[in-house]
Image (cartoon, rainbow, N blue to C red):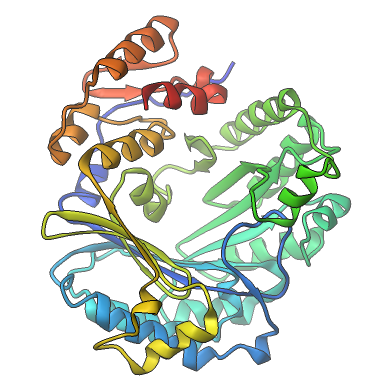
Length: 409
């Protein structure tokens, strides 16, 4: 039975202050990777480090920043996240140029700003870690994903067990404020005990945060194509559920609290940037293929930049009036949709959501007839708990979270 030692749903003044008002996250996408992992559905293109247009790409991101940030300068940012792709492939000096431009564009950034760079063991060492810290990064997220040689090969990873563990150790020794490690479990042939053992080994290194994801098969990936034709070996759902519980118990024993369905942390080391997503806060997306969601003049919109790196590079010469094709797709998000998204993501958090407050902020009624009926049924089953203004899924029902949330939507 899953359980928590902390009181779930309790209010947190520090948390509320962090995401108060018009707080904004900034995401920068770096699309290049040394290889494309077969499970990955993020935009990425294969390229060697010396073939990547490091400076030109930084110029384009800075030009996009100038275009997009003109109306946002008064807003306070709570986090900056360099994701990918593999940002540890980017020349740290060029990443630093982009980071400096962001900080200049947002003079009201919070004093203890979380600045994360995703790094893969195959492109990360102590010199690179120190260089990234020197340009302003203070948090590393290491994509270790697993420790077993056969499963790492199955997942398309370029590193082995020792390289993965060394990358985490290097990040910890570098002086970074926080280090996170990613782990994928639920891979064919893996037992729950093996998943827990891998989680234990990584946690024992002293990481501040871990993201532990069950392998998910996405459309548009090589695994997706194999699954459609029955050629991909998969674990049964019951075995994946056993691994979820075993990883939970192991990481809780290691002092990493299970604060979101796929995320664990030591106290006060929760991912600020990802919490912004889960809470439905605005974020500015920069870079090739980046998504962003912003509120402007009472209208909330989601956009995605063009997904072709060569086309995106044209932005470096067009900051004042970019080619419309660079802007990609734009979607208007009405208040009811925004509330549904906050329910969808917020109920993944251990603390849950303050449904009435969220609805009031968006100016909509939180209780449609169907939602009120579903809420009563789920609370009767014990799959939802109301504590004051907080609504949450108890840990014992997290395995059924997708279905519970679907009923509310």
